[in-house]
Length: 162
Image (cartoon, rainbow, N blue to C red; front, side, top):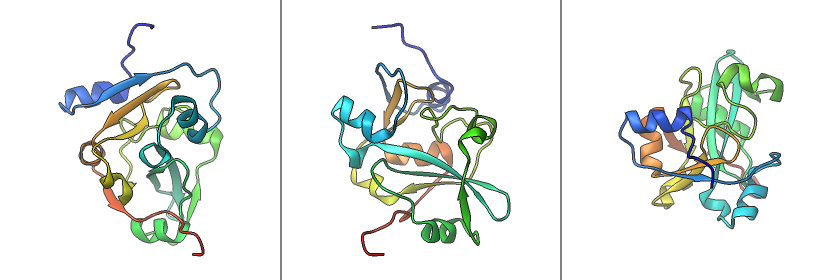
């Protein structure tokens, strides 16, 4: 096992005295969160991805949701008070967040953007989020994530038939 590398997200959690467990894994190329969960034998419902969107106002918003789910754009727009939202283009991820695709986490972005965590996170003692770089995850309590990112919980995912 290689030496433990602290990411910016981990340093922030340490500074805020938030308990978490880092998890490291080999990752040559990022495909998606489902692929990583399958590789590591982790439940989809407990593994969360971080998506960044831009509103009609040009403001950025962060959404944290289970890896196998899709954002309901109408619900998400309503929650953040925007007319509409558009997914951030892959080429802009680093400039806006400070992270690369596959390593984006809501903790420690370049700026603190309004963050919405899907309410299903509250069903678990801990959830799994990206640790801030490829091959790194953070396991932490959903309320601790909410506190650190000053986020809110809401229903932001598509339901079958909606």
